[in-house]
Length: 261
Image (tube, rainbow, N blue to C red; front, top):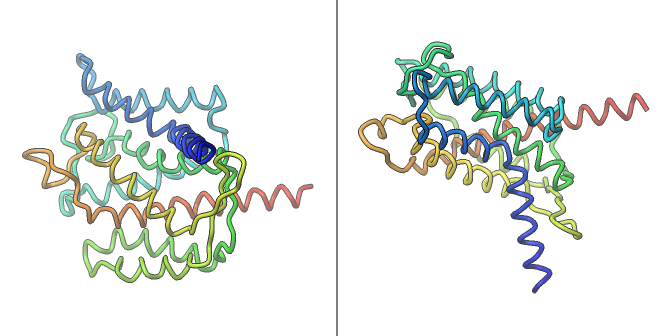
C-alpha cells in the first residue's frame, strides 16, 4: 500500500512537471489580472510574457528545438481555428479586451493555449517514457484527424458530425494501448481513456481561463458561468488531433534516425 501511494504521488508530480508550460501560462494569466499594467494592453502583456517563457524553456532545455517546432505548428492550427470561430458571423467565442498584437479579432497570444496542449503531450511522452501498442495506420489516423478538424469549421454551416466522428475514434483506437512508467513498473491504459481524461482536464482549465478573462463565450458576456459540459466533446476531439500529430511526428523522426544509422 505504501509503495502504491508513493507511485501515485510520483505520478501526480510527473504530471505536474509535464504541465509546466500550461501551468506557467495560467500563472501569466493570473498575474496579468492582479498587477497594474499601465498603458500596456493585458493581452499584449500575456503575449510578451508567453514568448519570454518559451525562450526561457528553450535556453534551459526544458523543451527541445524539435518540440518548439511542433508547438509552432499548433500555433498555426489554433490561429486558423480562432480566426474562423471568432468571426462576427460565427461568434462561437470572443476576446473582449483591446490589444495591438492581433489578427482580426484574435489576439496573437491565443496560439499559446493550443501550444500548451501539445507541450503537455511532448513533455509527458518523455517524462513517462510513453510507448504505444497497436497504434492505427497513418491511412486511418490522418484522415480521421482531417475530418475532425474540418468538422470544427463545417459544423457552422451544416450538421455537426461529431456523433459520427466520436464512434469512429473509439473504433480506430479500440486496440491501441499506451504504456507509461510512473516509477519502477510500466503501466498501461487504453488510448481512448487517456483521450477522455486529458479532454476533461482541459475543460477544467478552460473554466479557469474564462474566469480569468482569457476569452468569453456568448453566455458569459454578462457574468461568468461554468463552461458547458458539452464542450468536453470538442476538447476530446481536439486532443486526438494533438496526439496524432505529436505521435506521427515522433514516429517519423525515429524512423528517419534508424535509417540514418
